[in-house]
Image 1 (tube, rainbow over the protein chains, first blue to last red):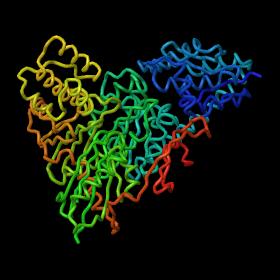
Image 2: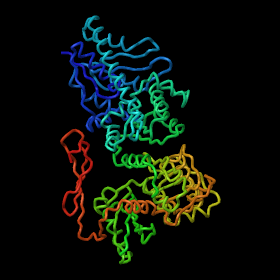
Image 3: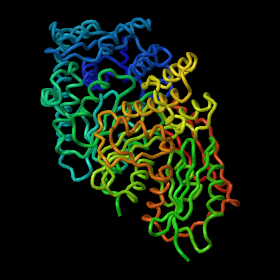
Image 4: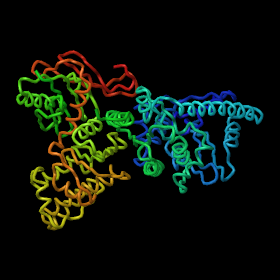
Length: 300
Length: 311
């Protein structure tokens, strides 16, 4: 049986649900790696080179977990979304890195809109490799696409409704593979929710709206995800009490984009850079004081 | 009997204690080294404070802050445990209600707090590295064979501070060794070091922040006259250093303890209280959390460090 392994890291947080629906519809069995844990991160760190970011190290840990448990591992390359909307260089490189470090067969497709390589073409290629007919693939793709659109729309509506909440509202700016990963940003979000904060996520806005808005902060931004993230700050700035930037060490995109945003926005912000050695005690000090600050007056 | 409130600030290098009355007057205070053992340091601290506290006072509130605030909060059964940024801001606002900028350099960390109309509007804390903080200065003082306390006086003597890399402690140290070996005078090197601390601070936590007067400089390093001098020179503003600048965190948390008093009375007597911690690694899941169990009088009072919340 040809089982596909899906690492629960990086791309998963953009395409995971889509892939699962697609494979479900095609009756292709797959296995998801577990929620990130210390063991996975430690493995990843051993495999990765020093200079890779924590998120990529974590990704390699997930691949390592899957390597003996499936026949294929799904590793796409996502390079750009046209019109100078480049993705992070790790997204370009992931396939080659995995290919070099592991002996597994990889399921692979390219998204490179500048060269006309779309998600649709990519998934057709994968379906064909797995021995499915054109008709089957077409149906599966449509099915997954419709479900995905619904899900994304729902997320957008929830996020927009949160902007109207009466609670203290904090916009969390970061890449979804950092924000929702248990070993990177999840603890921060849990802490905020526990303290009765309305948490708004930068990635749950419609990029069609946020992406062009980033021009208000800078016209020279290069990477798509930087634009989306900073656009979300511009979009929600008037309705929120504060911004928390979360990035993994040493993210090149964020080191530029977040610094820029911090200098230009006029509302309270906090910058948290997470590495594998980051203890929550240090984060807690910063978060607690940030919430105190939003809480207001300190005099009697 | 009169009410009083204890604030304890347990930093990485030093432990500070202050007892204030209802009008925020300092009744007594103490400043000792933590020496890597916050529990013992606090015991010593309480002994000193107890000795100097007039008999007519009863302690009606205890607050803890600083990096060991949670642990010591449990030990003293504090009625409030707060982060050091809030504590510093409150302490400073008590004496300087118009302050706009607080610069703080402590043993391991440095922070900047911006205040407007009594509200913190922004702050930053050093992230990954402790470059340019008190521990770096004191280790360099040791290298040069002088007391950390005399550091400032040496720096003031210099007319010609040497240039030292301001970015990173490791580079700064190699610069320092090099400059000493080629024959620069001690005071010029020390002055250069003080200057590099200031530059490092402004490039690190201070970057992108609008520093508006009145500016107050506190934390242990504020006692170093050389650093104060270069802050003045580089910012071209007057820098206020309070005589209690090293105690501001403790004062702030004492004020908070007063505001949050519950009516309970506290004892400063710790002789009959045993307090211990036990660390172990949990192997129930692949996270292998490092756990710490806290015992007060041999009774488990809390445990920390688990990701899942089982302990």
